[in-house]
Image (cartoon, rainbow, N blue to C red):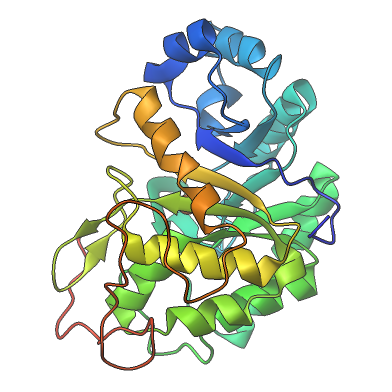
Length: 310
Ligand SMILES: [Fe+2]
């Protein structure tokens, strides 16, 4: 068991999306587990819940949320948390995750994962809220590093320091999204190697992999295409950082959804990167070390003038 919470390594999973319901029920694909978007099942008891109940009979599931707004300065939404807990009690997920972010203000949900100012004040605030949520849910919370498109001038620490300290001080788990690290490294000129090496390995419960859109001067985390070679390389490093027991790995693909077997092929590539020593070539066709030459191996030049998309 690699993580301190004794949460299992579920293997290689795929995000459960409604266009694939029929294929999954009919073909029982050999994926190890599914991650659901919590909000898609919290307020419904119709067709999606009936499908979920059938899928749960054959596969472990994890609940992944997008609306907890753990970093917000507004009070925690206990109506939301109650619904989350009810769903968890009903479907018994392996764990519950959400994002290190805030998602709205004045009672409005923007449905965006908005970036945090990385300050001591924000850290203490977030840690207290995580403790409250964990006490309420009666289980550890697992939080993901989001993709970001701007940085705050008031920040006094980097992303990985905030994430690591948050996990230690709140005693929560980390969902390390390797693609998000790559996106942030390109958008902000961060060192992706250092990011991964700095994360406390025993806090990492799960990895995310996804594709993105490279706009040249910046990257947008679109989840609409294949994982690129550089992200696979970072995944190899992250997997080695966790150690031989590994951590559950999940492919996210949310837009321009392909047929389910395409997702299976994509997630199967992860096996090529498990247990390989750093510097060896991956066996994925077309894989190459296409990393930028400047700076350290996975550091990227800061974009000259990046304007957030919204
Ligand atoms: Fe993710």
